[in-house]
Length: 139
Image (cartoon, rainbow, N blue to C red; front, side, top):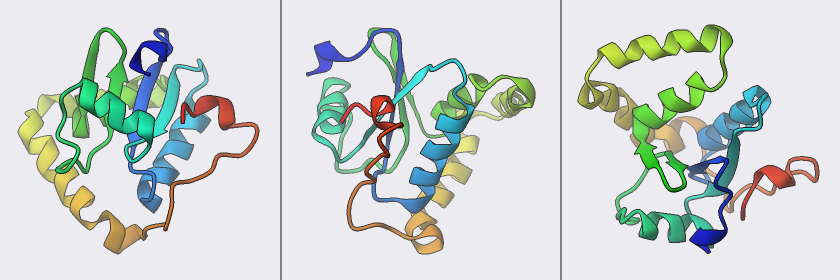
């Protein structure tokens, strides 16, 4: 399953039942002018397979993961910053947050992640992409 991932795309793993996460995926899709990203939910068979391949504990994960097949993976604030860097334009200004150590950036990230269901809500199942967006999703 992992070997069939597109090598020329960056894979975004996200919480498929989280309303905040789903709206963030929609934002990434709308800014992905160079068709850099593909998406899979953390809960999907493929998402779990990628997490197992990366040796990430799926029980304790409440984070976005950016996976560059054959290269590296990033999670939490670093993944978010790397994704925004691909947007170009004024989004490049977000890279200034790298002046803060990762553990400090992740304090904010973890606080939002911990409260995301309470603040933004949760769906009963993962989103189903529209026909035109289906090609962006791997699962």
